[in-house]
Amino acid sequence: MYEKIGPIEIFGDNSSKVPFCTTLLLTNNRESILLDCGAGFDSLAHIKKTYDVDKIYLTHHHIDHMWGVSHFPEAKVHINPLDFEKVSDLMAISHADGMLAVLEEETFQLWLKQQENRRFGDIAVGKRTLRPDGNYPMDELIEIAGVDVRFIHAPGHSEGYTIPYIEKYGVAYIGDIDLTSFGPFYNELEADIDDFIASAKKVLDLDVAHIVTGHHKGIVSKQEYKEKIVDYLNIIEMRHEQIAHHIRNGISPAALPEQGIFYRKEQLVGSPLRRKSEIIGIYKHLERLSHEGGVSVRFIEEYIQQHIARQEYLNYGQ
Ligand SMILES: [Zn+2]
Image (cartoon, rainbow, N blue to C red; front, top):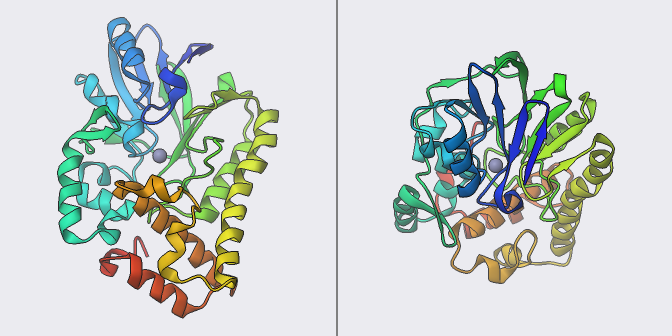
């Protein structure tokens, strides 16, 4: 994908499918700046050849949004304040994403080793951590390459998630509120279902013409977003109802992650990351369900017993 809106260039190889993500370039005669950095090898090579990238602003710490930073060693990297310390610390990341809680010590150590060179299938995308140079204030105007950008705090997908909003050109980069058929991703301990919904709805308050998604769906108008966000958020309720239905039918806590709520059973084989995401995603729904009186404390306790190897890491930020 390549699009240009005013001075904003928008890149994404292979429709920005994971491990790539849509990446924005803002440039004037003084500086060239990237918003997120995972457009794909071809796009990043093109950007590197054409511009001297001065700074990179990251919406959040996930690897698909930042793996390309190592391609621009001269650039100063800025990230949201909540991810500033986390992104350089593999243990902090693993606590936030739930790996530390779900995996047993031995598997966890193997996992840590793999983070030195993360792979998505055949594609090596480099180290999981980086050392940022600064953190930007959220919900304030920052001048980037001559345009005002506001990084709107939009938690849910992750606690520090931000939506860069460029009012002058009617552009909002909503990234991982990605409108894909998979549905919202909140399968990490630092994520929050209700915050995700609130953040997705907040986009409707913006004065925007071009809503740029992070993966696969490209750019949509506000009207399209208004329509698509309903089905997209509805996936949350469908998952919720599926889980509630299984519980009403007497499923055992042990069997719950094998029901294909997020990933099909065969997709979990050999992927500790997906297995973790299935377990944590369901756990988020169980917490929500427990507030509604739809699941017993005992069921949740047994679920934790069955699937969380190290319960001392299950609480995050509480
Ligand atoms: Zn993400």
